[in-house]
Structure formats: C-alpha cells, structure tokens
Image (tube, rainbow, N blue to C red; front, side, top):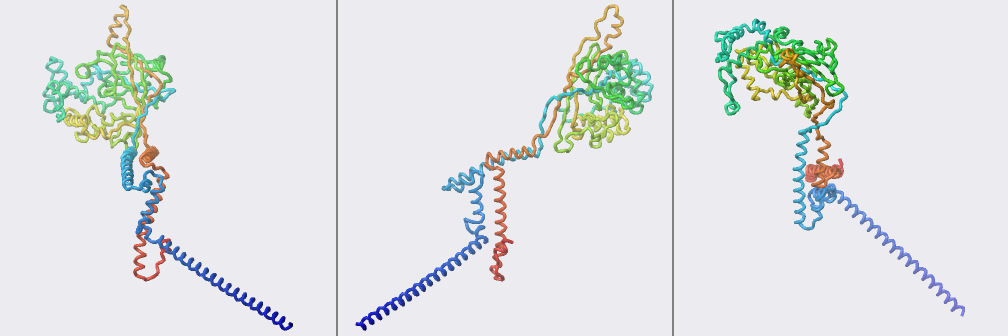
Amino acid sequence: MVTSARKQSLITSSASVLVKKATKIIQVKSIDSNMENLDKRRLSSINEDTEKEKQYKMEEQKQNSPSRFGRRSDEGLVYLWKNFASNTTAHGFSNILMSSHISIRLLWIAVIIVCQVLLYLQINPLVIRFFQKPTKTKLYLQEESSQVFPVITLCNTNGIKQSQMINLLAHEQFSDIAEELETKKRRKRAARAPKQGANRSFTKDNWKPPPKTTEDEDSEDYFEVDEADIKEYAMKMRILSRLGNIAQDEKEEIFKYGYTKDDMIIECKWKDYYNCKADRWWKPVWHWRYGNCYSFNVPDQSINKTVLKVTGAGPDHGLKVKLDLHQEEYLTDYLTETAGIVLHIGEQGGRVEPYSDGFNLAPNFAHYLTLSKTKVVRADPFNNGTCVQHSRRDLGNRSFSNQFISKYSVHACREICLARKQLNHCGCSSYWLPSLNGSRTCDENDMTCADTYWQQAIEGKLDCLADCRQPCNEVKYEIESSFRKYPIKMKETDKKLKEENEDEQLQLLVSFKTLETKVIEDEEYYFLENLLGDIGGQLGLFSGISALTCIELLFFLVNTIVVISTTVRWYCCYIPAKKGSVQNFDMNSNFKS
C-alpha cells in the first residue's frame, strides 16, 4: 500500500515537472516567434522608410529637374500658366480652364482677345493725349480793389502843321521835294506829277509796286493801279521817309514841325477835379504817321512820378480831356484826308501803336469810353517757347530798341523781324519800321527792294510769324464807346465863338466800367494721375483688372523668367556633365546657388 502510494506520488510529480518543462518550451517558442515577428516588422519598417526616402529624393530631384519646366504637360510653363489662370482675379482666364468643351474654351479665348483689342484701342489715345499735354481755357472774373489806369496816348491825324512846312522844306532832307511842291502849286490838280529833272524823284522806272505773285493774279482782290496813283503814293512815301530820317538823326528837331501839347490839349481833369494839363503828366512820343503824340500816365522816376490808380468805376474816377484840332493847319494833299484825334489805350510798359491799334475820335462830339480789363494767360506746357515771357527782351536775335519800352508784343517783334530782313538785303529799313543799330531809312531808290520783303512778310514767306509768338501774359482793354453832341448849342450872341469852335474841338472821358478783371487762362488739365485713373477704368471695364491683379501678373512674369533661366541652366550645365561622367552633379546645390 505504501509502495503504491509512493509510486502514485512520483508519477504525479514527474507529470508536473513535464508540464512545467513543456510550458517553458512553449513560452520560449512563443517568445522566439514574437521576436521573429518583431524583427520582420522592424525590417519591413526600415524597408518602407528606405523606400519613402528614395521616393522623396526622386520627387525632390524631379522638382529640381527640367522635367517640371516643360518636358511634362502638367508641369513647367504649362503648370505656371494653369496655376495663374485658375487663381488670377482677372476675368475670363479661369473660364478657359473650367470649360469642359473645346468650343466653349475657344469662345472664351475669342472674347478675351476682342476685349484686349478694345482695351488697346481705348488706352492708346489716352497715352497720346498725355504726352501731348493738352490745355483747357478757363474764364473767370477776378475781383480787384483798385485798377492801374492805362496809358492814354493822343495823336492828331495831321502830323505836320501847315505853318511849319516852310521850315520843313528848308531842311536838307526836303531840298528836292520843295522844288516839286512849289511847281505843283502853279499847276492844276489834274496835272500833278513829280518833276522829271529831280535827282531823287519817283519815276515809273525807279519805283514800281511790289511784284505780283501767283496768288495775286488768281485773286479777285488784286487791283491794278494807274501811273497817277503811283506818283501820288510815291510822293507821300517820300515825305514820310524823309521825316523818318529826321526823326532818327535829329530826335529833338522833329517835334517842332507838329502840334505842341498846348496846341492840342485845352483842358485836362483827373478824377473830375485834379488839373492834369502840366507837362509832367504828358510824355511826348513821335509817330511816323501822326507826328507828335502825347501819352498820359507814363511813370517817370526822374521826377518821382508814379503810375496812377483808380479805386472806383465811372466818370468820377477817370480822365477828362478837352482837345483842339486846329484844322487850319492841316496838310490835306498828302498827309491826311480826315480830321480828328487818334486814341491809343495800352498797358503800362507796352508799346504805343496808334496806327494799327488806335481808336478814332471825331470833332464836335463828347466821347465817353468805358474800359474793361482783360488778362490773358497762355500756357507753355513743354517749356519750349510756345509763348514768350515779358522778361525775354530778345527773341531770335530780334532785340527791342529803346522806343518799345519794356513789354514784348507780337506786332513789334514782327516789325523788327521785317526791319532786319530789309537791313540785311537792302541796306535800309522802311520809314514805318523801327530803326536798328542806327540804320538809315529807305528812300525812293530802295523802295522796290524794301517792298519786296514787305510783300513776302504779308504772304507769310518770312520766318517772322513762326519766331514772333504770343506773349504768355497779356493785358487788353475792351472799349465801349458812346458820344454826345459837343459843344452845346450857343446863343446868337456867342456866334463868333461858335464859328471858332465849330469842327475844331472834341471832348474825351475815359474811365473803367468795372474794377473786375476778366481772366482768360490756359492751363494743363491732363496729368499722370488722370492717365492712371482713365487706364484703370478701361482695364476694369474690358478685363476686370485691378492694381492687385497687376501684382499677380508681375509675380507670374517673375516665375516665368525663373523657369526659363533654370531650364537654360539645366540644358547647358547638367546634361553635358552627365554625359561626360566626369563628376557627380549635385543638382540641388547647383540650382540653389
């Protein structure tokens, strides 16, 4: 019994030991299997990482290779274009990519092309206008508290007094004319003709009208003149040319042949109560056609005389002058056929030109003239002399002489231009033109040459019109005239005084109508900001492009340049190095550099 129990115990313990050993063996095998699986997973993970790294490197190499810049349709320039077209804020380009049908794409392409053509047609005139620097005229009224009174110049239409003709004919300049005039007095008026034996007289051979041009012959305004008219006109020109010589050589001598200030001006009132007849208020000026003229309100620093101003409008704030014509002194044969006063109104410092810019006053009337000041401001957008500043005293080597005071004028410039042409080709200048550098006045022997250039100037064949441009700043006076009978009807007891004053006197009153100045101003109106605004509007209308869209386009152009330059470097550097196998080409380092 004991022995059986022990056997049973031994068997049980042996079985237990075997079970434990088997369990350990199973555990060891399980651990080995797990380790093997873990190793496999680790190896698989390493392989996957290696594969990913290879793929990443291949992708990186592909990104830096020219395959993305043109060798594949979805990369390179095509890629950049698709990216720009799909993301740009400009209208129309995204529709090309999003359209599924080719016909719709072509339609959008055609629409975009048409819009771009219209955009060009709209922008091109805007750019041209900007570079032309156009100007606009602005008209407005400028309030003034006071106005500078203009220069008032008075001339008698008869330049030489009849009583001074004896003294004038005794002058050496008139030695040959005196004999002819004496002969004419003994002849009938119909037989007037220059004496053929005179040394310097006009004849049919030594003086002729200016030559006819093609335009003259075809124009119905061209008239033939007979020999009698030529001779009469020639005598008048001879007298005026001789007076011009005297005025140039003997400036003080010439004034004694015409009317004095006291002869012309009977009474003068400034602002209706100041006496202005004294010599200090009037400056004598000699004119080739009207002889002695007298200018009021000319400043003179030598006697401390300043320019007069007015602070109100109307007759109480102006100039009132009573004038006498002295028609008994008129030379009706050659100098004048009408009686009266020629008035010139001009700005301070301007040229006195009553012949071309004068206002005629008839006797037996009281003339009331009201003035309105107009200021003209011209623009010179290119600063190339389109208009002339008053400070420029010289224009194309045509300097003003002292008689033109200080202000530039187109009329004076053209006369100086013509005088220079005559002086250079004829050796003299016409009597009605300014004398330059002491040049002599043309006489009857020079008239054919002088009148030829005068005719060319009239026809615009000289360069005077182009050289003498308008002033940048100009003051003009608009004149409104009214008149009354003057003097009043006298009583029978004043019959003698009436006969003395009849057809001899006139009255002049000059004042401002208003103190306002009318300004006519030319100014530029199309600047860079206007151009940018107009272009922006056209871009938005036809393409939907804004300033930000322009920045997008700039980035697209920069990227395109980078792509093209990188592609060129690839084909120039990488491919030859790869074929030669001289060295390993590090793509990334080369493209990053």
